[in-house]
Length: 255
Image (cartoon, rainbow, N blue to C red; front, side):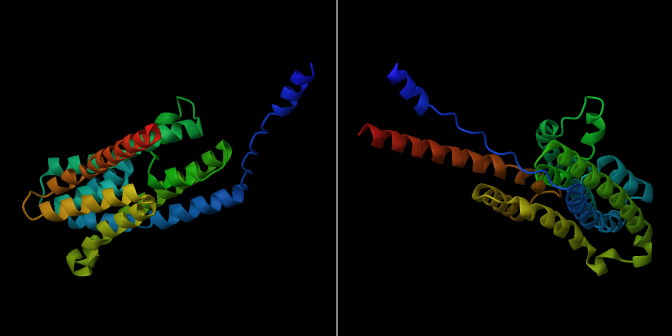
């Protein structure tokens, strides 16, 4: 009996970890507005770039209203401006936009929206809304951050797209203003904070190398498609290295 008492006394339950404190609504709204306004204003650059690539005002605004993923939009009009095939340009934009589907898988569990709301929320699943949402400690704050970021960014992006496309004619030759650099600059600004691990940085670097090597010899738009091979290539090498380490560690343990 005394042994059982000793065993029970030693088997103490580990107290659960304290839940992360909820953030004030004002702090969530402030962060969401900061991201939404900062990125939403870059829609002006897209409007000008799109108009310079030969798209009409209606086509430019339709892209922002219906596609609403900046990197893919810039990739599409950039390829068209360089004389690329429309199908190739669309394919490159599509592959860039595929990442949002993976964001959606994660956000679906975090936000917990009903099935009737999910199709509407899916249109706002982009880099910025994902970053703000995942930074919140609880579901209520996550929903607030997602909604404010999505609403602010969607409204500003479309307004500034319209303004940029409408004012492109007054700017004259957009190449003279150096606005052809707006697309890669905005994309790099969105991408850089996401490269947190060595694997991600190596994959991004390899993608750049693939584009630079193939750009002079392949049709416009194709190098962007080939750069997508960088991610699986790096993952394969990483997997081989991890398996080699596991075999080495297993051999040492047996010896």
